[in-house]
Amino acid sequence: MPTYEELRGKVVVVTGASRGIGREIAFGFARAGASLVLASRKTVALESVAAEVRAFGARAEVVPTHVGKAEEARRLIATTVEKFGRIDVLVNNAATNPVFGPTVTADEAVWDKIFEVNVRGPFVLCRAAAERMVAQGGGAIVNIASVAGLRPMMGLGIYGISKAALIHLTKTLARELAPSIRVNAVAPGLVQTDFSRALLDDPDVRKIALGDVPLARPAAPAEIVDAVLYLACDASRYVTGEVLVVDGGKIV
Image 1 (cartoon, rainbow, N blue to C red):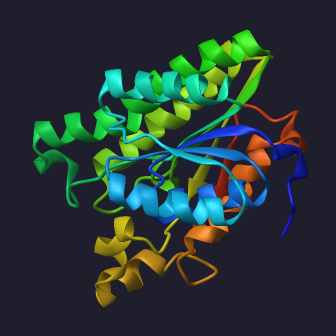
Image 2 (cartoon, rainbow, N blue to C red):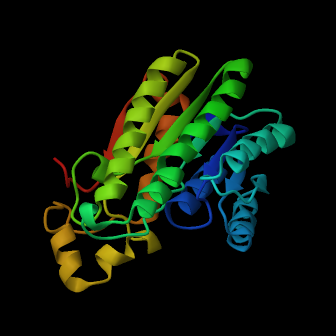
């Protein structure tokens, strides 16, 4: 596994850090020697992740945050700067998908909830982080999108639409914030997490979901981490506005 030594000492904010992909991303940055600010709604779970991060010898601060609430999102960035004096990397990982089924039968409130967390939250966080990053001379933003934002997926209509919006936000900000800030996205396919349980726990649905995945299995959360670290570090210094797909070949 690469060491990503250039990330040592960097200040990294990870949202949705209490479990799944976000938790593994936090561990990846901790192994590289970065300092972490961990955000999610669940304080107890965050504290557990923070303890594991500190076991790697990294500094970790916990900031309970509902990213769909603009004032809490802005407070997360302000707290990071207050505690560390800077922010070098923002990883927008927090997401929600409270519905599985046809788009046209979904309640409008579900649409609002998904877009509040999956699109408006990252927008507010990017804006707040970018202001500080520009002032300090640079930074990197990595948005965790999904292959559902690149190709419609059964039962994931509104979620996929929100991730398509996040991808377009990524590309737009990459142009607007260059050259001081690089903005990229990672688009995972099926990952074995609580979030994907509706797709993977039912044998029939699992068979359909994995039927067009050449590697014939879901990813483990840790298998998404290197893509994120690469886009956050100097190895990708000439990469911006890109979507790095990690999906086992699903959308080849």
